[in-house]
Amino acid sequence: MNGLNVSKRTIGVNFTASEEARVQLWAPEAKEVELLIPGKNKTVSLTCKEQGYWIAETNHLQPGDLYYFELDGKKQLPDPASLSQPDDVLGASQALDISSFKWEDGSWQHFPLKEYISYEIHIGTFTSEGTFAAAEKKLDYLVDLGITAVEIMPVAQFSGTRNWGYDGVYPFCVQHSYGGAQGLQSFVNACHIKGLAVILDVVYNHIGPEGNHLAEFGPYFTEKYRTPWGNAINFDDAWCDGVRKFFIENALMWFRDFHIDALRMDAVHAIKDFSPMHILQEIRQEVDLLMQQTGRKHYLIVELDLNDTRFINPLSKLGYGMDAQWIDEFHHALRVTSGQEKTGYYSDFEAIESLAKSYQDAYVYDGAFSEHRKKVFGVKTENPGEQFVVFSQNHDQVGNRMLGERTSQLVSFEMQKVLAGAVLVSPYLPMLFMGEEYGEKNPFQYFVSHKDPELAEAVRKGRREEFKAFHIEGEAPDPVSEETFERSKLRWDSVDQEPHKTMLSYYKKLIAIRKSQSPLYVLNRKEVSVEYKKETQVIILRRQHKMQDIICLMNFSKQEQPVDVPVYASLWYKLLGSSDQEWAGPKDMPARFSGELALTLPPESITLYSNHYE
Image 1 (tube, helix red, strand yellow):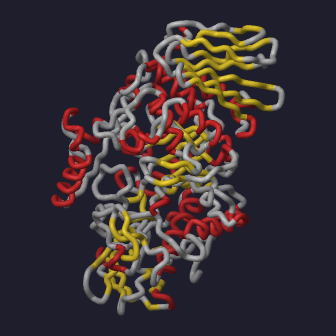
Image 2 (cartoon, helix red, strand yellow; image 1 turned 180 degrees about the horizontal axis):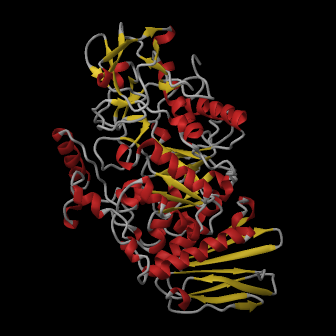
Image 3 (cartoon, rainbow, N blue to C red; image 1 turned 90 degrees about the vertical axis):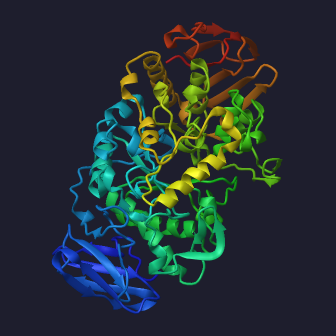
């Protein structure tokens, strides 16, 4: 690909060792391009090279200077590859030298993906301050919890200071109100020093609505395909090479210049690309080349609403080479099994039965007819467990409810413990959503801070329309209101209060068990077996590794349920019982027993037994 260099950023404004600015802009249909530096009253003309790239080298632009591009003597526009927007999305870009950050993570050793226990955070609501610096102060808490990887929701610059992050319009620019590029670099540096990997959520399927100037520079979008956000990003139409380079360089920048360990790519099923080499495959190739040069390991994880192993199969098997995918189906099955409503896409899932299948087969729909989709859906998968990310809640599944209720508001204290256990004993990669580990009561609602009154009203109207069938539950919160944003922040003062304190201790114990017991942390799906009893709402999950067995007994019903499980071991030792009084439960389960496993399971409980005593 023309101009692609994995070892350094080439598009936008970059600086040499002598602080000379090297400027490169892709504007294939422009006749004239100039760089404007208003603070110095300077104008620098760019020269057009092949395939629509405009180039300049100048000493007039220095780190910290504000600048614009002017195309054909008309409108002044910020840099599409801007690294800083101190005056919001409509203001001038600011030149930065991101290579000047003093990293202290030289001893960081990135661990295998199978060791990921992820924790999803939204920088704006994770702390009261809503900054990277404030989030850094919580890292010891996450280490103590047992987390191994912090997943950051998107930080690409968006309009205002309140947004989930999926309305970013400058993919290379870190949200200024969070602390900008240096704030993110400092956060990643601090994570690595404390032994935490960092996953960054990026959006390559659409660009936000306010401050989106990409189409004014070139054909970044195509009318060939429509998406929920309008015209698709142009990955396979005329002039697509420049667009592909733009996003490939973006992925490489996060890994190389920000030391990010993994990218979580949003809704890749919405990427429209019929090129001989899909854009995800090309990103995989270039990231592989970067890893060869640096010796550092990086992972590519996708959010995927398709049960299609083509995305996670390696390039050698004609796959797209993604390392892992989110499987919402596990979440949907778990939510329905816990007694929550079967509306919308949840209607496709059966309590107990669907969850048992997901434990065994990863995909619930792997070639069966989906009533919700009105078609046969999915394929069977033999991919290893470390290629699937599971959770009991996440930003989407909480925030896309009308009132943004967390699981703590929807199920009992005892059921919360069951859901946590169900995720952490799975043969997949577990992920927590910020605050769930102590039963946060504040909602996580949808919020934006668009400046355009018409756009803001359109978002309000859209949310009202989306939930008009739920009028009995009240009005949907105003997404533009600052109160909606403030209401969505974590209440850290509740961590030391009951019952939150007990819930937090319970999560710590669960995670410690997950990390210490080889049948749980070895993600061999061939050593998993599942039995279920739909009439009693009981699932018996067996995990095995070498000579050790762990039996996970889950009762999702509101009544005691007897279980009788043939076992071969002479002695069984309790690893954890969610119903134990230690966890504010109603009944202690036996600490050990011999012979056949015959027990009465308390309502809404999970109990783990092992044939090894440690």
